Image (cartoon, rainbow, N blue to C red; front, side):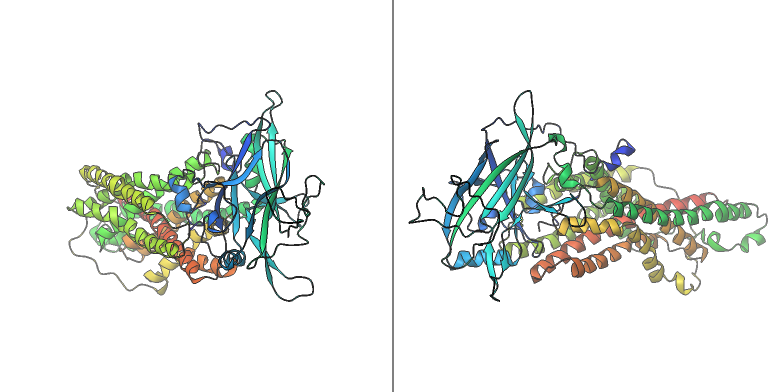
Length: 638
């Protein structure tokens, strides 16, 4: 699915870098190309995309004009997973040489080709093209702001409408394209660099006199008579046996925009105030939780520990209350401790992947000019972070007195990836059944399996081996041989209730930014505000840690020492709210009507929610792990 094969995706030398969202830096070695006047400019075509179906198709799946030989461009792993299919096209320009009314080809539609065009028009498919690594955009003026322009990816295949005086709906195709190539001129070398690629599509029923041949001149669009296409007043209908003539104009505009800043207009944020509101909203949550944590740590705990350490007699010790009572059980290994080790290891792997991805993105290494770079980077980082997954799970497993480190390593290496791969494989089969270019080819599937088995699994084993060789993490207090009975808990301390409550605040800290990420993925818009995203990510970490510590303290005060799993699930439950929000977004913002597309959406969002659960759960677990060790190591136990 083009959407979730992510458009998407992201630590930083200076605070100023946080807001370079739109100012892209380019990968070392990616040099600008200089064009002299008259140099050929080769336009490439990419996939057809639709926000209604989320199923990409290759450009030539529709009977458009074709070059003599169709050549595929080399694509990286991320591009293939996004469903990109970049090929050459019959559109060839000459630098700074305007052209008017160039005829590309003439087509007579049969029943099959007319049906293909109609289906794509009904599903609101867009045609995507590329020139000098810049995507083709349609500029649209915003009525609410003067001189404000937003850019839409690609142009619609066509549109539906009615003739004046008729109620019957017809399909019309955009068969005339007016391209605008913007360039920045070097006054010294007289060369130019391309800084913009725009189009205005029109539907025109071209007319000509006599029989059609290669030298036929159109009467509706004639460069000799300076007659240009400026509107779609006489549109080209799509139907069986209809003749369609595809034409284009090319205009060249000199621009003040420099090559290094050419992506800025594409990535300009028109609504950055909403992002600031999101961050302020999240910071309020953080301040509230920080106040509670500070109160617990500085007042309650300090007083409790001081008082406890001053107890002189055994009789007084027996009268102790609250969290101190369970010191002999608090570090008792939990049930299903192996599964907890696996989930914690996987969470560390995810945390490392996201953190490093965001560093690269903020430093500009994953700029939109590097198409598919974000997806490729995330996959490779996931694979290499297997080292930390193995290390974390083995260290925890050894602390729980586990001895079979190879068993825990295998579970860590296979459990999460196998679940995700199974869902991905089923969804890919559905996409393949729709004959979409979004279906991952067998070769790419093999490459993914190789990354998993050939690199990730061995690294998890290496990490586990190192982790298991390390000395065991010693508990700050001794564990009693006989488990203490847990008293009956108040209704608000019920595990289900407190876990569900715990997930609300971490989700509340990120849900506004989540809206923009979902819009980027499913409505095919640019997302490059990694500065904001990083701040929100830091807020998410702090929120998950603090809410888990607060609820863990209340739990221990209630003499309930079963905190291991509870700490993981408390912050991890925010993933449930993420999935529910994704469902809300589906029904309110998207116009997906096909059942297959709906299955794809919820399939991919379930993968995202599962990953979010593992990430947030691990953050909460480690916060609680640190907190319990801190408070119990401060208490003198006789």
